Length: 310
Image 1 (tube, rainbow, N blue to C red):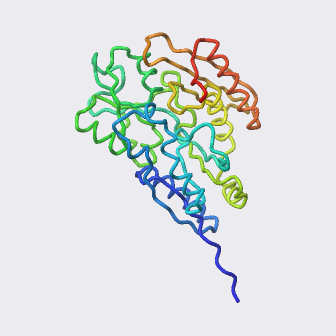
Image 2: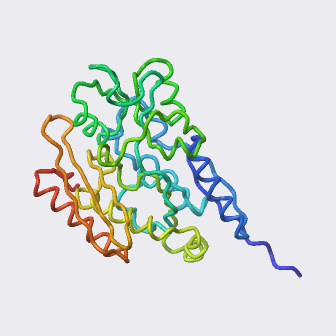
Image 3: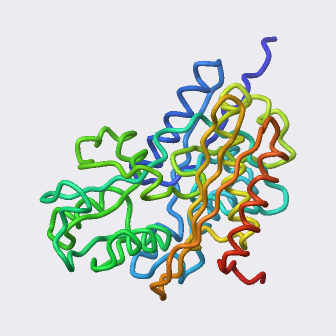
């Protein structure tokens, strides 16, 4: 009697084009290693609530909650996330099993008429619902009008093309993954527009008791990316854990030394950004997180305000 076939690994994913690309990417990598894989498409509250900013309705964790419920109930086994959308603290019983090699972490300037941010006329309307991008844009061009922009990537581009905005700011990684790099007029260098913690990286979440899945995902992990984003996410965690905080954190590795830069701003105030920077030799997640904690302390010392614990 032949052994019964191994049941497929089911990936829970949002149904936006970018989320499906990410899930299909992981599916192909796992299938190349001999696993059977299926997708379970889902719509999250973050996809449904489009008339309010994320900071007012619960943060980016709204994009992952339904996927975690599918893992909890056994309808799916892993969930693929844009890491910048993943809350800094996962619910009990869940684990980040894998962080994959990072795509371009930078922000992209997208406009049908203007070459770059400096070319925008005074009072031009720029779309973003990210508090981080808002405070960084205000620091660069306080004369601009920043308006909310929600929806998946295709929806945001459509709103731009309809003339609702003079320009919008998006993650370069999403545009590149979907073959839309031609829409990028220019890419912000991190010293001008510091990226969000985890931006450009994919994280795979599992139930923490599924060691078999953790082992299966291990070959997909990229250790340098994992250490870098662990430090970035530690800054956010130490500042209160909110994905919707007006906070940027970005690390770069050079010969085993991780340099971590962070910035915090107040969207209601025109005060200068609070910035902090530090570097350290990092080879473990604990060292990466310690560096992030140190940066958070420097931000607070400079006047940055973290989220109030619940």
